[in-house]
Length: 204
Image 1: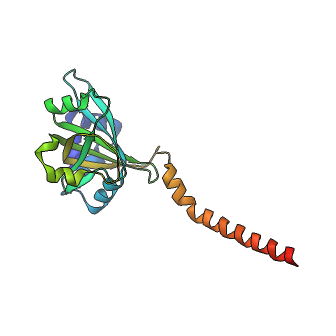
Image 2: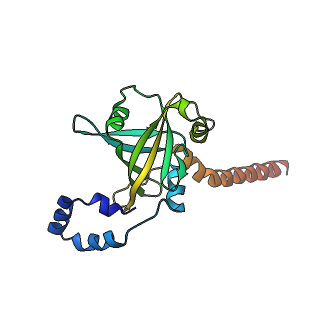
Image 3: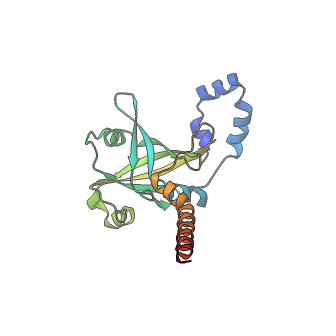
């Protein structure tokens, strides 16, 4: 998987030459090859609760759509494939229609707490629910209410990490609650001690 080799077209290389970054990226093209997802990417993807996917339509416009679910709803099939259950949404089916005509998509996953972005080039495949029961069982999120419509598999062609610049750290309510749990426990213990001290002083 050589992301730069796939991403950098001739026009993009000319822009890089004009802007002075071509030499460093040329070196990257020769060395930046990864044979599938590493453990780090797999852990990152498995922790995501959303991502954005761009597909290309017959109207010659790209279309970007958000996909979300519980943390872990994106499943690792193998080192080159990830998959999800596609839930019922607004029923416009723009992404689905685009994929039917052109399976090539771009995906970006952002972790705001980590200030990390993973960019993925992939070829998408639509799998109907009745086509593969074992796959459905693998992709099905546990303890999550949803209405499934289809399954989507993404065969990863290349990926790359963005720098953390301009990613503002943001945290979910659950993440904040988890971070504050030790502090709340400590405060509760102090309050208990204060209560006991007041009671002992009152008895005197």
